[in-house]
Length: 105
Image (cartoon, rainbow, N blue to C red; front, side):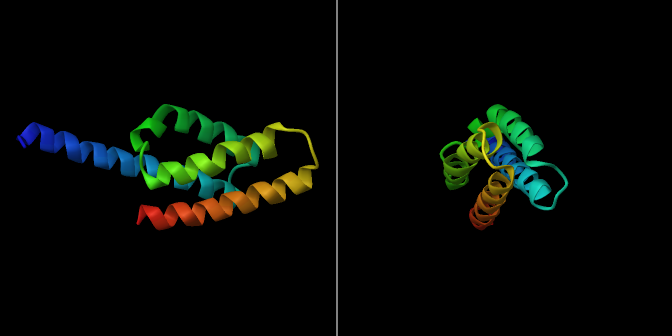
């Protein structure tokens, strides 16, 4: 392996770690009440659309992809009881956050 491919490899690892940490921070911002579920859905979708490809193929990506997009769609965009949707949204994000933290470390 030459020096440039080695540097490229480590840059991609750093970028992937930054993407994962940012996605976790966005969830934490919602869970701690800094942002609403509506704001979270917008922020996460834009960031994930832009940078999700960097973490594609990782366990983190699989967990995030399997939980967050559908959760946002059902509990933010679809009609229904707001209290129930808030409860479900919070519960799913809390569970997903815990799973993502475990695979980050």
